[in-house]
Amino acid sequence: MKKINEILGMRYPIIQGAMANIATGEFAAACSNAGAFGIVAVGGLSPEKFEEEIEKCSRLTDKPFGVNLMLMHPQADEIAEIIARHPIAAVTTGAGNPGKYIPMWKEKGIYVMPVVASVLLADRMVKAGADAVIAEGTESGGHVGEMTTLALVPQMVDALDVPVIAAGGIADGRGMAAAYALGACGVQVGTCLLASNECPIHDNYKNAVVKAGDNATVVTGRSANAPVRVLKNKMARQYLLMESKRSERDELEKLTLGSLRKAVFDGDIDNGSFMSGQICGLVKEIRPLADIFADLTEGAEKVIKGLQEV
Ligand SMILES: Cc1cc2nc3c(=O)[nH]c(=O)nc-3n(C[C@H](O)[C@H](O)[C@H](O)COP(=O)(O)O)c2cc1C
Image (cartoon, rainbow, N blue to C red; front, side, top):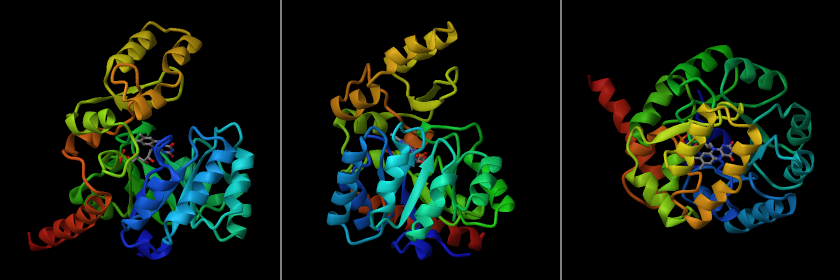
């Protein structure tokens, strides 16, 4: 089985997960330059700003990189066309079915990898022309599904004829080796990159991830059918309390309005929405991206060798 880096042309079989308001052109280029596959995220951006970020990424790296399209973006059609106009190696998509854009992207040689949280949805994406899928478990930071990475990845590998990349709960060589054992051809990571020197988030956010323990996250938004994993703080607790009291949707929306930006840019510990995965408890220090990617890959090789000696 080919690893995802042999398909997309980077050094390591690691994809930097899209992160709204965080995965800028500069950050994606830094990830690509450090040997992974950088992804520019559209979340929180206008089409014009998104195009600027793509152009910035192109200027800052000569390595392959990709973009992420959240399909619930109100200008998704326009953004899909912007993607087709640029020299992008791959696109990841979330929150919907990108089927109507796939022929346009594939005509430009763009590799299409939807992020999916169930086999049924993954199968639908493959039938619509997806080249690979990213199987994302509920351990991950940001919007989440119900299935765990451990249960989801092997079921997807068995059901599909395309490469499967594992995401959710991976932050060291053990997690990456486990992903290979389940049949994945590479990994996508997000949470462990929040604690990188290059990540353009407020220091309070980085420190909160580093300080977090295994039980530090909760899922908010289940009542609104938009579950999101975040660090437990005053805002998250208040949200959960309001959900338990069956508050109206617009009351909940009022509470979270601009909360991701409050976390990312202001480091507002009480009122920000600090998206993070459950693996935050394993992230103990802020390090250069190059060290994180090298440790993941070399760590996985060591674990696999160790298992062969047992
Ligand atoms: C802060 C944050 C923001 C995220 N935003 C997005 C996003 O805009 N689009 C998307 O497809 N995934 C998003 N994700 C999910 C990541 O791309 C990735 O799949 C996930 O972080 C992998 O799991 P991990 O957090 O356990 O490493 C986000 C994750 C985090 C932690």
